Image (cartoon, rainbow, N blue to C red; front, side, top):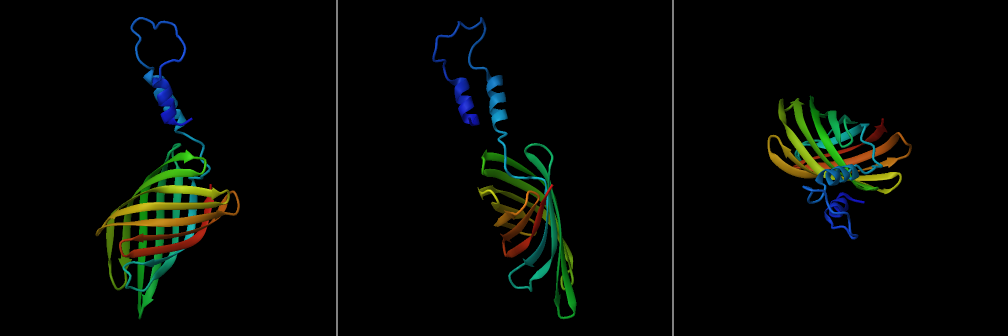
Length: 211
């Protein structure tokens, strides 16, 4: 039974003739309704939210420069039933003539999730980001990125995730991310994903280790 149904049952009049209410008692028991609705919102989820992704990434920062490649690590760690800690580190490089260009990305934030049914979760993320450049261009960017989306499990071993993103950094830009995981064991899966925010695009592939 979903939370809305529980609220309606709490508000609905009784179908039988109950005993007269005690003096001073009136209306539904809001405490009971609130507790029942809150408890029902914690539906069992088939998704694991404590994991580490290890992947190779390809980055195109503006659609013009040569692509950069390197490793990226991303972790998610459950703190409560619906809240998790997020962090990541990525390093990518390319060579232009005799100059090596590097980009390092750091992020730290939190995420929230809730189960809609036994194959669909709604998720939301907020992360502070920092990007450092060296080579042809030296500098750094700071800001934040927020996203809302879903995790879907169309079949038992295949997961699909889709997220709408908004980034506030040098420019305010929107975008999205689409990815998939093939869970070939309980603890390890093959992870692929693509992301576009403004003119920047990223693609990565690697492994997810569920903890």
